[in-house]
Image 1: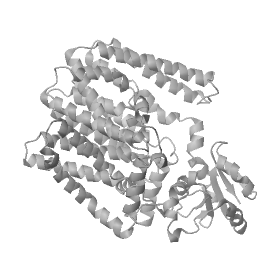
Image 2 (image 1 turned 120 degrees about the vertical axis):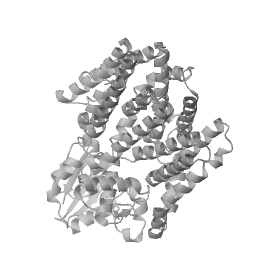
Image 3 (image 1 turned 135 degrees about the horizontal axis):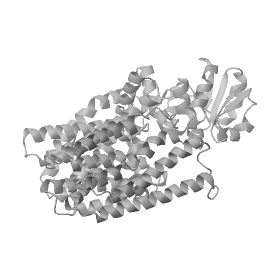
Image 4 (image 1 turned 30 degrees about the horizontal axis):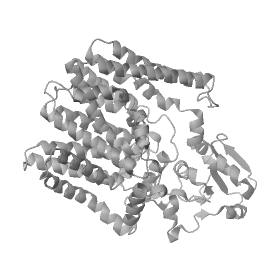
Length: 556
């Protein structure tokens, strides 16, 4: 096998080992994974595939496609952690294939290195792995947007007016429509910023409209059937979805969801792009070299627009979550791949050496810090692990993250250097799902507690819940009629409908509810919240918990 063929096989093994095999290992985390599992579960149970519901209440924060894909996975593999996370992992695989296909189109026929390095960068980047093995919608959105961008760029390079260009623009429109059906109007903003910025940079003024109208029509037609169906079934959907989920989230100032400063992503980006953060200078030198052909230079410009303009847009928005910038990772991976391949051709490896050595130094310090926290303690930080079978694998993963960059800096073969560096986080990333600290499971995963007492909860049992554990209670107990206590949280909109009257109980009314229904009522809540509520509640007949900082079940 050639070295390129070996790397291709290694990438497949890496994807299976990191993205597929560990999917069912760790429990579901509140609030996101249980939410994005429960809504598809309720779709399957109710047969309503148009309007999303959570706990039987309208939940209009996202469109339908992400829920449909998860529901299909649940029907194929059962109601479990693996099924909920599988669509995200497969979406990462799709994005990786699209990266490879795009870069190979502008590379010499016998040279796949740039594309393979780009895939390696993408699959081993910290945020891509974390989000791609977590039950949220962002990896699916990123894959649909990657399809849109790849097809549009190829269309922009095709002969104007040719059938090939038209089909590529149709495919770009389908990708854009699918992205909209996953997460809404961002699917229009991100391609518009990227494509418009690139065409302006290329001074292709005529193409600003000439290449845009067909994808826009196709995207609209892709969304239209469900868009009309949800409007007929729920006339207020588009009003809530547009103003609450977009205008308020991105322009709401201090009232926006998850407000952060403009610099939030700039500060957090170095960690999100690890370990490749340290290779940005080397890749930059490679991108500026004279080894790039004309098509590669156009792709570099396109990827710079694809990365920088959405990143800046998300930075300007009022609400921010780390997952928002996931669509920026495919262009980042392509740029690093092209830059390092160019560096390999020119044999100007000094900058690569510095990046590898910096990575060695950084993760060497991280390993020392881990040991100090685990065995000595720093400023009262609690040791993350209580057992050797937890902290020893974590240390091994950190050691590999430290030593492989050092080996990469010492290797003589340039291809081997890049491969060794790219593999440096793999052991830690593979082990990570097995090494969730007990404190994290206690605070974020009530599944074991709920399943341990599921047999004590019958069909006529009245379940009360605080907002923090609602989604998990619905998922694990297979119920969509749980009564909320005190705080509506993200159920506020759904509770505003007349048929939801009585589903939210003020704390002052809970005692009377319990007294009237003695013997067939339970309360599920955060342990900390329950301690605050104790003065308002009667004494329970029994109480169970998974730790002081976790969750409780109180029976009455």
